Image 1 (cartoon, helix red, strand yellow):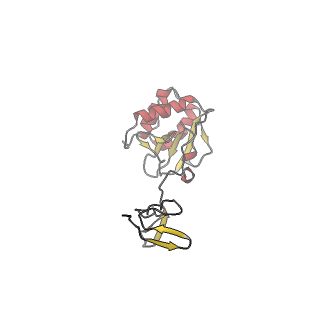
Image 2 (cartoon, helix red, strand yellow; image 1 turned 120 degrees about the vertical axis):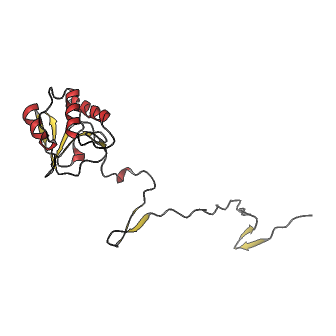
Image 3 (tube, helix red, strand yellow; image 1 turned 60 degrees about the vertical axis):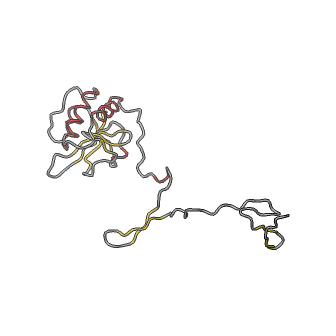
Length: 192
């Protein structure tokens, strides 16, 4: 006895109703997708109730990075880069409100300066580094553009301010951070 499969004639092609086979063309039918395609936008409401949407990032896209890692500037004193490494090794996960103390110690340990600065407040660091230790102020307004090893000094109206050293992938003082301080930048300083 022969088994006969039911079939349908579509145009000039004979299609057997057996699963995933097409007779006369000898091709397999692609399987149906089991999951819906990924959305390309995420929609949400902001605090004002206005609907907004953003791209959904599903894979690494280097063209979308807005703040890339900084590049090493070989023309700078290598002791500045060593100070950045020392500060990173000694830093904590969270601030201990001793940024200027930790930056001073890293600069002395790396041999960038030969004695500990005397100023008390972090916002005074730039002026003292220029007048007593031979630092110069760079014409940089964006902390992300500061070279590795440079000292960034920030202002604060009724506080001590903040000071940090630029590393290859972030900023360091008494703690490590991928982003710079939100305080107003007073200046970026390097040993000149």
